[in-house]
Image (cartoon, rainbow, N blue to C red; front, side, top):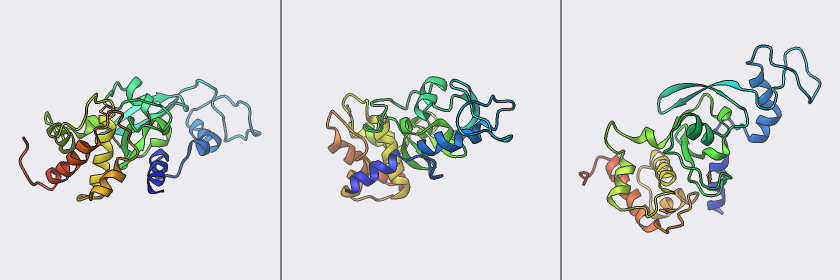
Length: 217
Ligand code: FES
Ligand code: FES
């Protein structure tokens, strides 16, 4: 029951409450309003202040990623995962199922883990997006990345970026999680290799590192 709740949370868009349905029926019209002279297409009777964007038409967008603004032109249908990987070449974010089932694409949106394949890029405007690349501390691994390395918390590694982002999000909201809380925290991230025992240990270790206990090995 709680697992289902968490998965639904990850699939939801940013806290703005904007959903894909909402965007397609409402926000898209607002975004189109940014484009001067955008052609009016089909749908509800257009008014002087409303315009509907054409299929394939680009709209301007600023995303704030790892503390830096990125100016983009995007199609409204593009997911955040697609924009990160294909347009910004930030390949730390992985794409597995591309339909909200595996968690490989997890990023933080305003500090909360989200499936970027289920989040439209336009929905993420005016949020703070954190990707795997943003966890690095200069040339060094971030605490969660370091803990995963110390505990061999992966086999093939494909799920690992998403697992790391979910653990990062968990520890930001709960600095000292119990085993059950850790299990719940990564329950939206599937690991086909079954590396969960070491992922749980790595999460405990990352919590220690974040609290400033223990030297890195
Ligand atoms: S790629 Fe997004 S949940 Fe699988
Ligand atoms: S390490 Fe292979 S899927 Fe998780």
